[in-house]
Length: 122
Ligand SMILES: [Zn+2]
Image (cartoon, rainbow, N blue to C red):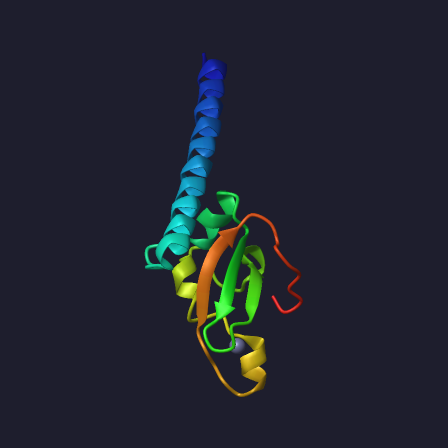
């Protein structure tokens, strides 16, 4: 009996994990659609955790000032994984502008499944 219950627990948990992953993927997809259609509002957005779990390990951003595009690996960010993606807009700096002594916010473009281009500065 204990074994059966333990197995059922495992099954329920793995189903739950799959459902959460599906929910996270849908959350990422719906956020992307909002970005593509209207460019925002960026809030609400998935957390870093949810984006990665949903199959979107990368975030494409653009510097609001110099328009340099960057592909950020969410897993390597120093921010807590519970940080909302939209909160990154003010926290991710453009290294090009930083060198010029300016600090400008990032425009969030979309969550991405794979790197679209190399980003040595991410
Ligand atoms: Zn810049």
